[in-house]
Length: 441
RNA sequence: GGCCCGUUCGUCUAUCGGUUAGGACACCUGGUUUUCAACCAGGUAAGAGGGGUUCGACUCCCCUACGGGCUGCCA
Image (cartoon, rainbow, N blue to C red; front, side, top):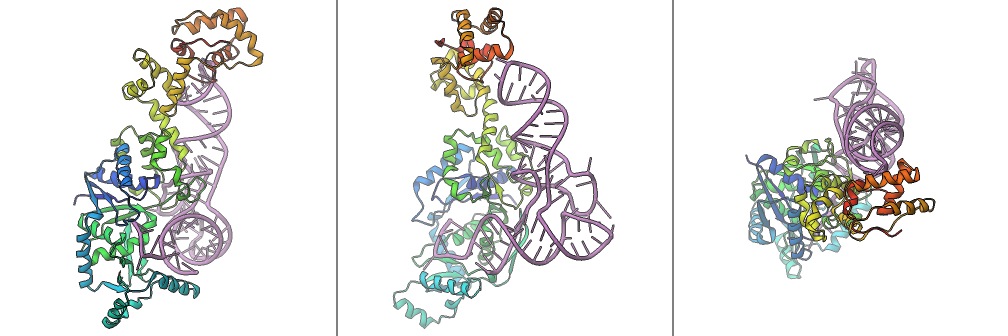
């Protein structure tokens, strides 16, 4: 049987790191097995779903190189859901309820106060046709619940292992609202069956849903897929991540210069027993992925960890990959390659190139310690006129050494600081030919 | 409150009853380097607590504590 996976976001916001982990895992499983990866837009909530987010979702996935084989939209499948609902009604698994949200809330609180689990009491199941007709006549709109079979629902989870949930501890899920809107749990189950989804990887927040969805799928005549629930990400301190999600959307990370391969490399390994290492290509990522290596414990995520990986990735890029970006900085074509060769070792994100280019183009604001002032002035007097070559630094420092007697760190460091304004940077021999302006000391 | 999952170095984790509790990242030290990075060598560092079972428990069972999730006419 060929593998089909799906990523099913609801277009009510931007993709964030948590979403991405889910998307990536499903994508990798499909690619690893030569299966199909579906992008399914779970947009049944018409109030919150926005076209803007649909576009954003696709843009983000494309940026990461997570290409889908098929797009589906739940909002386009309403007729199918109506049909499936009829099927469940005919099978006696759907029943109409009339309690208002306020009434339900009250029931829940009452049960909670009595120390009982807040499970729906199924009182609507006892309604006679006459009573239902009367309620409708009052202007009450009915909504529909799925009648669970009370049993232990078991499945072998791809990450958690064997797990079971007692249907009796869960309320019969509402699948169709009073206004006719189809709810996620229902649409998702219908789709997964219809679309031939064979493997579902999703967050641990869906574990309880899975139990009810298994029964819904079976009632629909489908075969439940293999489920795997990955742990949820927390912040570095173990705190809930959602509070910080604002700064962890893919768009924000991208704006900070995080590279796709760095992000993918971390997300494909974090929480697994395999070491986090930068992948050189999507193929490498696919080959090195195994859902079975992930643990069920909550996983701490620190966005800072993305930067060492990004640096590693960026520093390994060939000139061709950054040529356009360097040209956009205004670096003349004839010195672009030399500029990249010199600067790349000293950047974390590509945006850091700008600082180096500014230095080369405009010259530095010299950094000179008070104690070195006389020494630097003497050295500057010995500096040959431009143009400089890679030999200039060696010749100049040798001359300065002879004139002043300084050597080693005491010799080189003040000169670097005077010429570049920085303590660290590329080899000075390589920097000299690129410097266009001599700083005035 | 109920249900589900979890808890091993700072972090992600290995260990399927007997190990000097291993690895990766981070960190520290040394080497190399004009600096940073990189690289090489070395190092610090862990089984939440309490009961059982057993010749022997990180591993199996129970309790407690702590963390996460769910408990919506959201997804």
